[in-house]
Image (cartoon, rainbow, N blue to C red; front, side, top):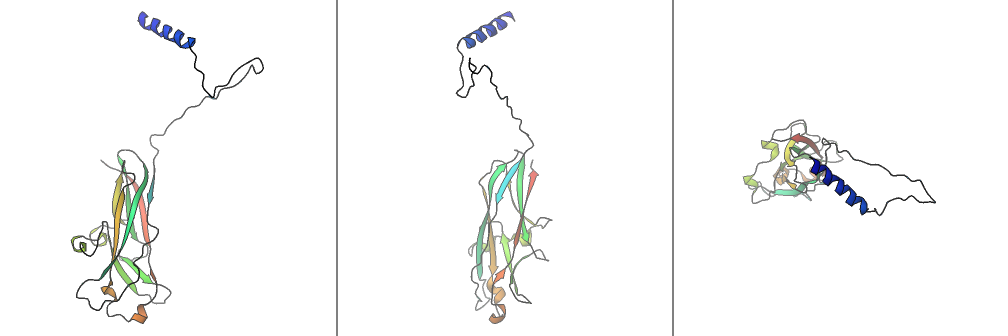
Length: 204
């Protein structure tokens, strides 16, 4: 016990014999005998979290075409992505992302003809993966297999430590819906709106 105290005193003496001045240190001298030192500290709230999820600004199917037949599917696709841009969350947390059509009354997704009194609506499907003509038959759209809750269909969950990861989305519109329609009646611009929602959750 005494040896411990002696060593502590010797260490203090040695340190005082070789003072180290900070570059930003203030001084006291005969001209300015008084000065001040700001005392600072920081307390981090362990419960503080923040995150940023980047969603697509637009989605475009391009120019649609009326197919000559409906013997086969005539899909057009729009590829989107949702990115976990920033995740300052706890290790047992994640950010779930949901999406839904803003105006649908049957839990499906639509684009509608603009600036007409009785607009023509075209349905499309949403996939939570990359889909094209070759593999669409082996995937199921979230609007046919997923469960719609208050926030929409669940797209995916970004877990802690997955900053920068991407959730792929594919919108698929079968142009067979245009078959046997009068072109002059359905011509024009179409639009719809996707609503996205994020929720912080705890994971086991």
